[in-house]
Image 1 (cartoon, one colour):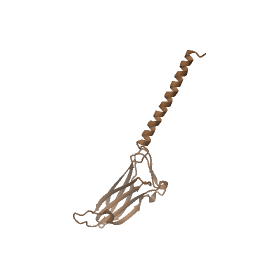
Image 2 (cartoon, one colour):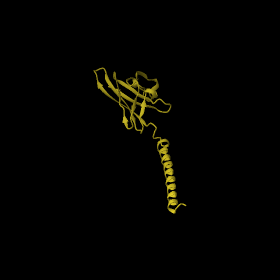
Image 3 (spheres, helix red, strand yellow):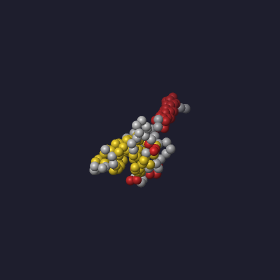
Image 4 (spheres, one colour):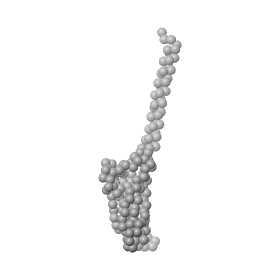
Length: 169
């Protein structure tokens, strides 16, 4: 016959096992909520564009263009390589727009278009909370130019565009 102590010990062990199972279920739901539902595994990319000018001679300047993808997310983001996608930079010339008329980006003359990933055949990875600075340079005569950076992450959802206008004097 079981003693009272053995019965109590058995009940306490069963309660602790049930509490452990419930704790595991709650922690599993908590992890699922934080990772899947809140989108913590999703990419969080911001794309910025800036320019600077360096005088070459009296007729032209070197326009230095910085295209910077910034990973604000908590997971690494791969650009190019096996995941596909691309990273392009386009420079278009804006010729004497008429007063009061919109400048239509699609109709502008393309001066130069370049694949930024041409030096990264296998693509590259931007770690969480990191910035990649891709620098391209082009010699241009005085004028007004429309610069566009396009970052395609290789899936149907993540596509980023950023534009800038630069006046080369």
